[in-house]
Length: 194
Image 1: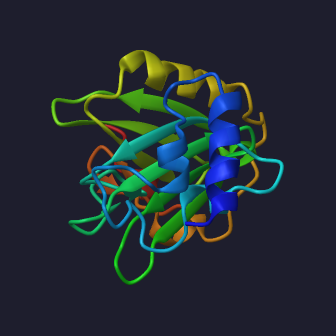
Image 2: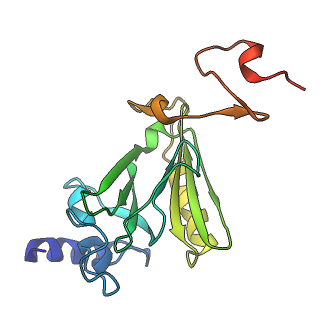
């Protein structure tokens, strides 16, 4: 980590009003992760020059579910996940030894956002017209924070979401237990309707 990374992380953390955004998280310099939550760059390096996170979610065991919550890309055992919610997009960084996995979901591609709480972890769900993204958060994440994030994203969504390239590739949809063919709008492709 360079001094400029730490300086920028500190400046951003001081400017943001939510406690979830900290210098340590932005600079990937947390005490619990001696080698860093991520193996490549610090989270702050994924932000554009004029971009800063309004909120940050973390998880030590789960990363991001692609299409469904069960199709989750998880961090390696000594790494973690950082999800930054900025004014323009949600960035999910999943720490892996062979190179971090990075997902960017622009708010103008989101049809709707919601959150779910659970016994072991919580998650933020972002739905584009073609795919769902399930950003896992630690169980200690407050429901109020998840509600604030959902509202923040909803304020920035478009009434006509812009598709993300590659969204259809990992999408799996079902209707009453039957797989839906997203290219065929006939009644047969949606199940029997009972």
